[in-house]
Image 1 (tube, rainbow, N blue to C red):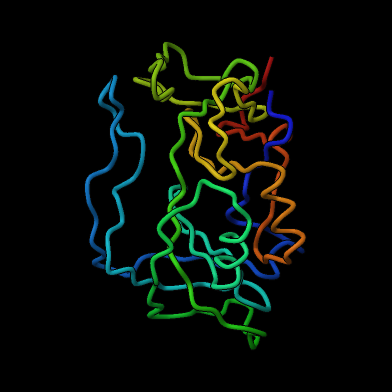
Image 2: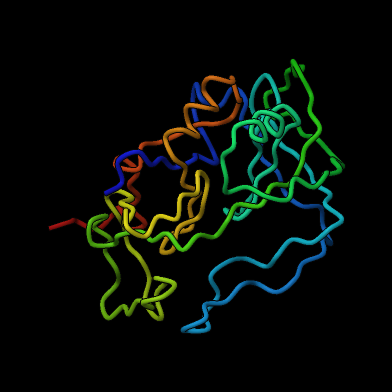
Amino acid sequence: MSAGFFVLERKPRGVQELARTDVVPTKGATVGDAPRCSRCGGFVGMLKWLPPYRVEIDTWGDEMGDLAFGGSCEWILVSERFRTVYAASGMNGLSGFDPVEITRIRHHKKKRLRNSSDYYKADVIRSKTAVDHLASEFEWSDGTTICPVCLIPLNGVVKRWKRIAIESQSWRGEDVFVPRGIGEIVTTRRFKELCEASGITNSVFIDAENYSHDYNPWEKNP
């Protein structure tokens, strides 16, 4: 069951875009090896981003968000305000909180920002918690074989899914995590409520039951 779980939206649109903040490591960033599955040996994540942490930032609204997202689901940038709120909450799933140097800011809406922020890189735990592919109604290309440990295809590709259902018995109690079987940041309800109660900007949540995606929308489903 996925009741109580939410997907953290990394590129909000429309009215939710008021504090959208995107980030990319500066050219020439230092990286380490990507993590591999202990069973199949396949890659289960991106190349590890190593210090020094220097970034370029794109803003899309009136202010810089308390959360800022890059192309990876394995880390996010967080403001000093978020770091303080999170540390006092007793929640888990984020670690590191290393200072980040901002080398450039691009303002896409051409507006004067209401605030600026120092950022910290927070690593998101890659959890043992698993996505239930059957309950999520994942569809794969013909002949796809899934590794039973990392839940990533050994061959073939995913076409679509209708929801993100978490295997409740596999959940390890993290409040923010990347589950086995999908490259998304998933959170608990209490993490969502913490962000909302604290006014954490650029924190947009989608109920996991409603989080669908179709890579091949031109195909007609049965």
